[in-house]
Length: 69
Image: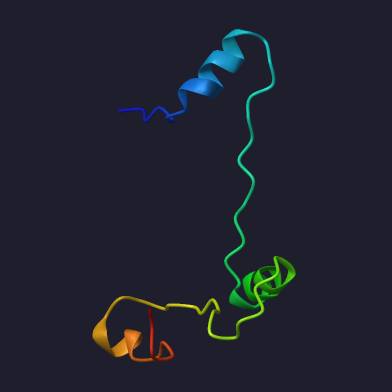
């Protein structure tokens, strides 16, 4: 059995019309980069920051700084 890759409707339509297919840009996930971006957006309050969550197990969530809102 051969797997066929799924594509979005807009990508399929763009291909049929001879237009370049839309490309997905990678998303940043580094908390240091996101926190810098947050400050550049004008958020001055130090109560807001991005942190990395390793997993959703209780033991791993204990590493997330508290309080979390």
